[in-house]
Structure formats: C-alpha cells, structure tokens
Length: 174
Image (cartoon, rainbow, N blue to C red; front, side, top):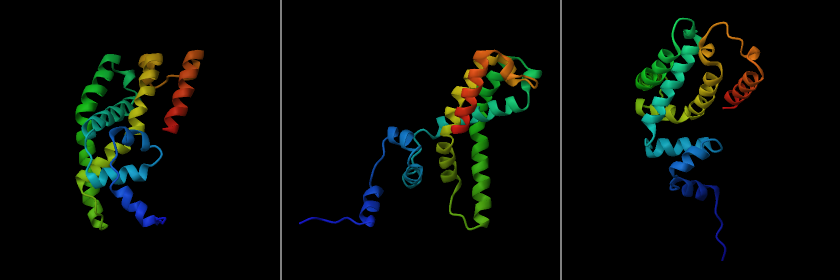
C-alpha cells in the first residue's frame, strides 16, 4: 500500500526540519524564505552579534567612502575607525533601528518585536558582509584614493580597472 503525501504533509515535515549552521549560510541564497522562517521560529541567534559587528563595519566603510574621509584623514585612522568603532558601535545603531521599526510597526498592527527584527536584520546583512572582501580588495589596490573625492579608479592602470569592474559587478550581484 502506497502512502500519498499532500502539500500539508511536506509543510509539517519542514516545520521539524532542523537546519545546521552550514545550511543557514549556504541555503540563505537559494531558500531565503525557509531560512528566515527557521531563524524566526527557533529564535536562532548563534552568529547574531558577530554578524552585526561586521554589519557595523560595512556601514562605517560605506560612510567613510561616501563622505570622502580620505581628503582629510590618514588611511590608518579611517581603517581603524571603521573596524573598531564601526564594529563596536554599528550593532548598537542597528538595534536602535530595529526598535524604531518595531515601535512604528505597532502603529500598523505589525507583529515583529525588536529582537525578532534585529535577528532578521543580522542574517539579511550576509551579502553586504561578504561585500567587505571587495571593499578590502579595493582599499589594497587604491589605498587612500578609495576614500578620496576626486579618485578616478579607471585611470589607475589595468589592474586597477580590473579590480574596479570585478568589485563593482560582484557588489551589485550581492
């Protein structure tokens, strides 16, 4: 006798499907709805703080580049500030942002609380965090010019052009 499974059966199986750390970081690209549902349902927080520290660094490097900090600061002070201060203070700003989203979401009958929104934000930042690799590559090639106002990346030679276009394409894909 053959047992027929309906879609309800498969949803029930998925509910009890435990994901490993590797599954979360690899399947988030192909099955984001499933991964975020698992993170929310199980309140998975294993890598929450390290992800938010890196997210703070991403935000700090973006801000340093967009504000042309290389025009008036040294490379050491920019990188030190982005890594240390961005990492230490960035997670706090994301927590405040999650609290504000939760608070304003209540006006619209939203169900998310601060910690669940914060948790989702941490794992949603994975593509941006991976983009740090390309930021560091550009800093290695362009140096302080990465943070300056009038830097022309395409006139920095063939290697600089290749790094620029590869980084540009990968950051858009991420």
